[in-house]
Amino acid sequence: MLKGLVQLTVDQGLLSSVGTSVRRVSIAFGLCVVVSVPVGVLMGSFEAVNRIIDPIISPLRFTPMNAFIPMFIVWFGIEETEKIAFLFFATVVFLLPVVVDAVRSVPEEMVQTAQTLGATKAQVIRTVLVPAALPQIFDNFRVMTAIAWATSCSPRW
Image (cartoon, rainbow, N blue to C red; front, side):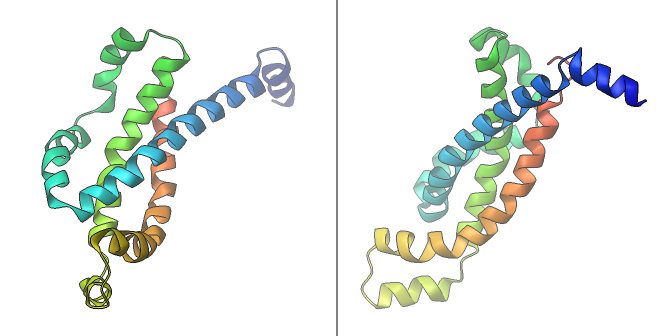
């Protein structure tokens, strides 16, 4: 078994493959965070934004992500861009609603207190909603990372 592990690592490039997977997941998850957190905060803060984006995102959560692979191959080819875009898509669909829920779960008393003290909507978002929602958002990053890794373990890659 030890001989097989050495052969797999040295001759067949196990470490290189692991490095490639880590890079793919890191880039895709980083892009997912950069997009999902601001858009989710806007969706959670403004009902009009939520009404526009939620009907697009909600049905995608219940669709098997592998069903979208042919579409991504047509759009991006079969190189790294397609793989990263697919991983981004597969995680953003799940992270976005989590961010919206985190923002909406901030106690209304905190928002009302800030408004009573004269805070504008932008100040309430920046100083109350985002800081109060961040712990729940960061906690869900762990789950979303697991989704990204599970998606990246597709046998076609």
